[in-house]
Length: 450
Image 1 (cartoon, rainbow, N blue to C red):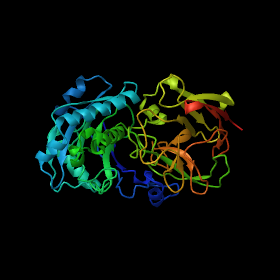
Image 2 (tube, rainbow, N blue to C red):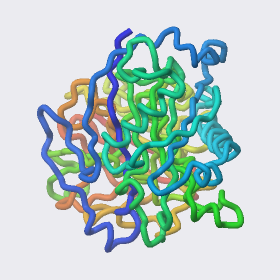
Image 3 (cartoon, rainbow, N blue to C red):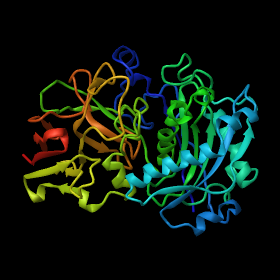
Image 4 (cartoon, one colour):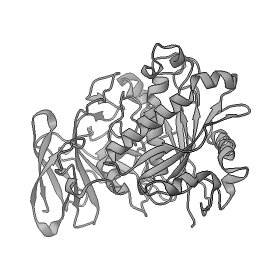
């Protein structure tokens, strides 16, 4: 079986911390692209590379064959940074810490997928020396991934056709933070030049994915000195990072915003849109690193993986005529629609509608919502309209999830207020927020086809 793998990178969402910082870190807005996708991650090399693999008969992955289809196995490697001894790293990232990390990551995914995706460690935790131990560039990370994978699959596994992570299997390379590198620390974002994770991505998304490899920061000396290391962000934040990177292994792209130019017409209508990758702090696949706890996965991504129950989905198209639709908050388990798909009859484009509200266990300690996520738009809870880029997309990576539309001229927000109307670019469909219930638990929408 031939698979196309991609390298996907995530960076610390420093632009989410405060208004002044965010304004300075506003992404560069680019026009809809042709040959190469647009990106705002200037600090990260998100280049793509090809690889083929049959992924069969790997001796290290016999466990994967025996597990239930919903279970994914994880082979773990702990890397040794420069100027740290393996003995010290073993104290910072204990085997028990690794198992707790995987347990919490698995619990998150089990909840998000209704038990359809879980993760369990397979085989011994290996610890490697990494030469200069650098992780500033993609190539430096790949060097460590290749060394780590050799412990599980043998030398040459990275380019081999019959070795490497099998279906529903993942190689995870964990790398400790350096001293002072944590939110509020003097060296915040310095360990890997602001990168917190890197992962491979198969050509097709799904809960029964071909698997892949992931590099993730986890643990460090500052957390080691705390009374309870898991109260420290060098440990606690590792769960969100690993959950995000494993999602790339399942085939998910980032969640960001459709950056649109146009006048503020009050109806959220714009004629020119590009993409700002990753700039959605309320989604696991966005820049959620300002959060404590892990935000939910968007309904569009859940649907793409095949883990969103049909009872939580509602489709609205022109054939059914104008429609009033009830929507419940995306994190609530009510067996009512949490995701509405609405199709513009003039273009065939599908829009996703969600209600995002405050989730138990998730908060943003640096600033309350709503807040400025950049100099151009405000993030807040409420009704979002988004799109998922198709396989032939030239305006974003195929599979990228984008809240639309927003931009400098239109003074967009991430959500629509009660009474506001979203009009698609063709004018073929309008989505009106009739009302939002108390506590943002439910909402009523009116979708019309002029």
